[in-house]
Length: 599
Image (cartoon, rainbow, N blue to C red; front, top):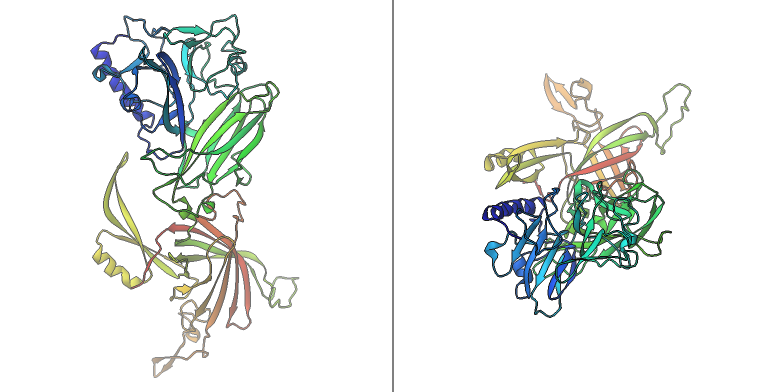
């Protein structure tokens, strides 16, 4: 293969773009597997199934007998190329090359996952196995129609070429047609004459003649992710990702999904905390989420696509909270137990990774804001025809529910406080982040409990902005310490006194002279004692948290981490009769600030 200097420069520019588009700058913290690449004197065709932890050709093959690595670029062109890597062409073929002894002439330098390579080993070399630890990614095949393609096939063990290509009319696999070739140690094509008895070797690349319409064939079962991503990277999020499994055959097909552990990460990579706890639902649109078992077996009808929605269960990963480690695993998708063959035909794999501190989402510390919806009150029914007797303890359904704002703060020790108001102060912290949309300044959120603190805060932080949240249904005091625990299956109780002269006391009316708690002597207002015009009212509130979202059932992935709620109950004393109230409450975390500034 001969390239001009101009072409080599152009190749380097192209390669830089490929590396960026391929996401090669992904941080090294995913799941791991070591690919064993057997090498011997001469040529070997290799399909790289993993994203190497060390991807530099010089680092991977340095100190070995590898002389050169030739990368077959999958461009959708009809430019000339040959099975014979020793053949020279007057114009560029679909190859990039790395030379061990002449890096200046090399047109690429790093290995890409899912790509195919021809590796040239010195003629006097002894056989060895090159271990390449790397991240497990989905590796889709993008065929160039009507041409020979150098590809690696996602086949399971003990699968023949005939079995793998049985389900497509585009690629012929029989003893009379030359469509499948292996590369021998001389770099020459070696035709596979018996495709129905010749096994596919995982990690080997072969030349396969694609049909005129071949684009995406990857065996009888195709697997892909939304937006074409190749890694299930949840970060510190419980938002779901959708895995698509398509049955490309004319009969129902059994699919087996295995959640396997990751290998130990290589030196320099973030350590693994083990398999992340995942939840799933099988149609990705409706239904409740369930824990993903070690092995999930399901059926996909002929020609249809199964959508599996997957999400981390942060509440099940709270035993270790480590920002310097990751939860890591591998999902393996195979077809097994089908009528055509007793063995599985395909083996697709995708890595799974979650931040080590994802369990912190289950820590309720922070500010929670929502509302209470009251739908029952003990009362004397007033509607025509209703029972006129007073129900002293059991709340009866109201004709129309009413709501009031609920604000709860949980500190780092788990102590919950009911708030009448909170001031959310945001101030820039000096770190500027450049984004596509422009520069963005990071900031810090701090929580104030008293309006009097706001003026001093802005004086100390001139760039700060402050927003106030309040609940008009509570007295102008607080916060109130709550008893119990904040979390699924837990209960919080709180006792709130409404002083006789508080603005939200039901006996107080600012513009009514008989309910202003004032007497006038010689036109001078004199404050009245409790009991003259108004009375102190006591509210005893109880919040019982539910394990599942009462509105969405088990389908809410934010429930228990970013959203909480449950049953509300209250009895009110100090009025003519004790009132019993019931309803529902719902909260959403708006800040993870665990401290309140109250002085």
